[in-house]
Length: 249
Image 1: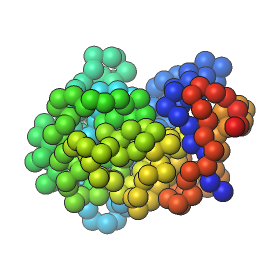
Image 2: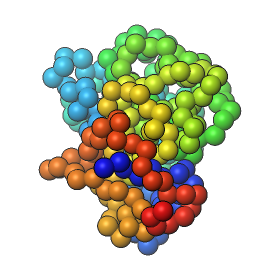
Image 3: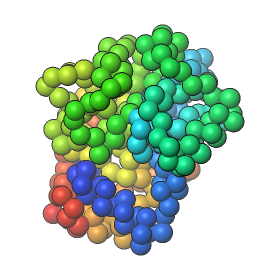
Image 4: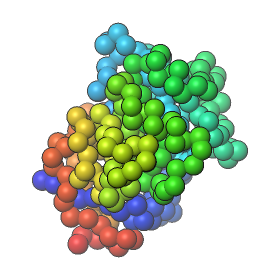
């Protein structure tokens, strides 16, 4: 069965519902998202691979917050995470997440190109479903380096620099770039129909049956304690929930 996708506007409205009638706080949702990303890394790059270094590239928004949570969990999963976080917002939520990483001794790096030479895996948590061009400094050069690296990349919700509806851009620093792995949070976004990476996961175990029914979101079967479930790359492209429109189409 093809999983239905959800537009960026609908995803934002769904998040609002989760934080209102769903009674979730934003930090709860970020914690669940970051844990899902960390579990995805565990599945595609297990710690027993003897390549434990993971570089988490964080953007200034919620995707970056997910990355900070992911870094903390990876530390507890016995990886050696490091954080690249060039645009740090003053919002207390992000500052608290960053402090939690600092308390664990997770290093912060400032030279992204140099950090790429000293890692075994990359988590792309720069831009999420709310991304809109143009790409502003310092990220054009960061995305160019990300697209050029041969180090495996796991992207959070969307490959950074991609259009949420139309997928990879025709020009710019990530032209022609596909990450190796993608973890869609809550539900896949329309860009997944363009994704040509190796593996795709969905992390949305917190979505209740009622919310799923109202928004026409497919909740796959999660096994055991897993917060993510792998779906075949070629299974995407089902019906889509429109711009803020609830229910099945």
